[in-house]
Picture 1 (cartoon, rainbow, N blue to C red):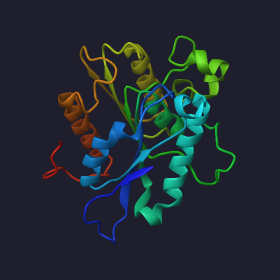
Picture 2: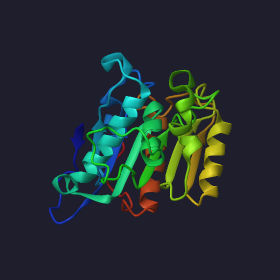
Picture 3: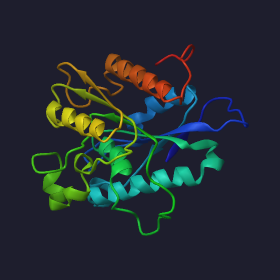
Picture 4: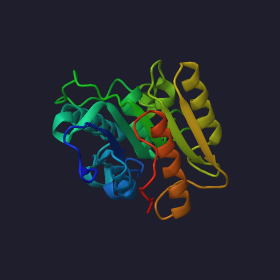
Length: 244
């Protein structure tokens, strides 16, 4: 993982942490996906982690190994809170597309833990920031042909539970991989179990609309993410850091 730290860190303060998982269908992708997000949020006072994980194209692995790595990453960051100077109770998981699935799954999925992990260390983040996330792996959902009946204990939509972390979701209404109605249902179920779930829909936008090469959408979604983290008490009001 690549670590982006706030400038001029105060040794007397523990900072929030934000762990990013890139998109790529669990088949490919690069940690550069969220590099600009990490640069911005580190300047805002969050220690950011760009996490690499096993994917099919490089390691010949399945989505299950990707999830094991994601959970290991959260545990590693939390276990090394003192080293990284972070507050282990202000840990945000974030990701886009399949990376959004991984972020959500670290919070909701009990299975798929690496044998070498210390399971006494929680892999559950304290908040979720999800960019067009893959949250339905069931029949008709994304990835079903690869996970099969394991979707029952792999798909975030099918494993929402009480005390799920507060969540913000960004989705384009023309996303061909993730139907709006699926995400609206996810929000409904989250709220039924008493968890906060904000859903921001972007009219006529496709999958990946939030990426840095779509600069205006990137800025809009970063601003909303910033406001969400302010509302949780993780950030103060932004008065000086520019979104670039």
